[in-house]
Image 1 (spheres, rainbow over the protein chains, first blue to last red):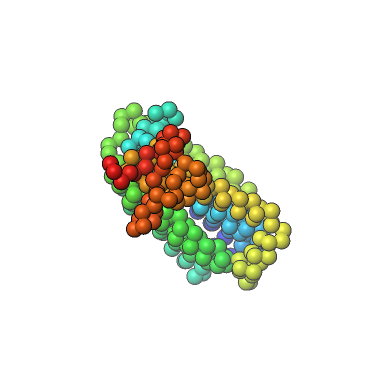
Image 2: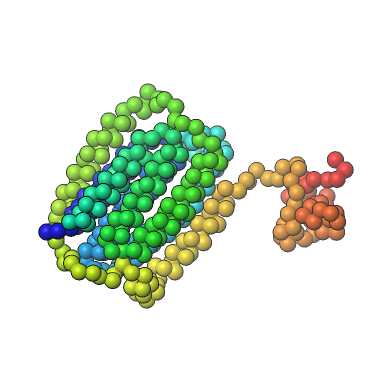
Length: 102
Length: 217
């Protein structure tokens, strides 16, 4: 067979998702954790596009469109939360924000 | 054959940039590496014959979201992470073990996917027109719900990022507040040269605790 197979894309997506999970676990900076979450979203998007392209169904790409919209909304709200945390605690460390009460 | 080479090139670039996102200690370098991941994924979408999604990926992710992230990094002036506290030293081996387990699980699940579905020849699935048709006919309800979600995100972001401590003594009351409380703000007190400055009346200060800037103090 010539050309990349569907399983190649799925394996790449799994690798990217796992890197994102590991980043969320080991990172301490809230912004870095946020970026790792974006990485996981992109890994899932790659799965959607790969299935959509190989099965010739447009639904997967519509899902990617909606996931991107949700990611944009998440970025706006998440960065607002990050700014609020920094304003209250003078720190971006996730361990410093382990309790809701100041 | 050239598509395999392209896949290997961009997949390697994506994985390398993703590892750099996790490995970098400075969040700004992580953000730059993440842009590399987004661009290489957009290139992979192009090889998958999905040009619309590739363009949206670059515009929305690499353009809008990462600009927002970099803006916040600059705004908060994040310094590099200092040395890890000893309490959290166990997290790195735990993360590696959990990552290995996760990737094994995902590979096991994905191995049950059919080997080679129909692929060959050009398809117009990824062009803009089929996506638009699907978005506005069959999936109209999710599309509209998305718009409500965006509205909620706008309101939520403004509410979260706003200063809620009350007005500082030198704060100036903006004209929009006069719409909300016309009886406690004296609109006739505007100076001619300062159109955006209003003075609150004594009743307004009692009601809302607003201490606007007075000319005589």
